Image (cartoon, rainbow, N blue to C red; front, side, top):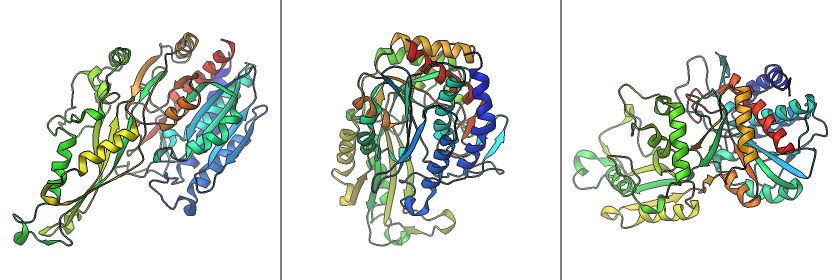
Length: 466
């Protein structure tokens, strides 16, 4: 594979980056954030953009289609024949998170910008690049005359909403995939930009909207305060059932799981590599300190321990418009990250019970739960895969590979684990320090992505010859 890296890098420069620039321009927000996605047509635009690019690739035997089921977001499916009877499945998605505020003044979520080797814009790294990198890896192998197994790809458009459309497509497409014994997911992260990182686990997720109503309309706070209970105070008291506000520790045992010693060891090893960037990668304001100072514990906090975030609120006027009114209602959007081995559906039920039981002051308390997702913990890594990953990292990054859990949720992985229980997994990605997925100034580190694509190609080749 003497020319592989050069072939892939050239493809990135000449073709992939320009396509990602066009992809970033499209506000293809996931259905959860754009309920009128079908009418707006943005998801259709990005999946057709990807389909058109895939069809133009000089990959022998390539077949591609947009799979559609009534009332569901579409899926891009490609199929490349190869040697042997085994199949490699590659995964990515094209739907995006919403805009957020705080972007650099000369860019925005839908305004791509390239600076210092980084492509800024929503969705490029999370993870619109995946379909392009997948075909570039396969094409690079073919151009270099290297054999590969059959490769199929599923690129969905519902991942940022919890992949609720994906099970139906798996039922539709899995029988066509053959014997899938290796899964590559490109929707994860990396601890630094200096080596190949593999993801050993992903957290689960549940959440929803907590609403507290105390009045049918707002009233003068001078007249009512001290008599009418504050909806905010009641909501705060309900959150105290979930979380110790002094430490951030989630309290109910239903949301916790034992941390396997192997994962704790991997966290210590990853923390030793990442050093201060384990916590220093976050844009802390002024003198804000992290919740823990020990780097390994910080990694375990964000990969194997539950954590609560309030990600939205209703019932509050803007500060400029806030009069002296006791508000009738407070509503919080809650996101509860779960350890990889906690069942998402059971956690959703437990969360509802904790919040709705015995409402303070008899207030009207409702918790409207969203879809829940169970996390994923990788099966034991086969010796051939461990060797291939490390060799690829040393070849293209000149450093050994590393492994770490990730705090995000990719429901697809748990779904695939059920469909293909004997498969090996390579879960990786380009979301490294400061890349800020879901937040402002998300970027794709282009030099890192080029090498990652070469690593993926090398591991696909090793899968064929093992």
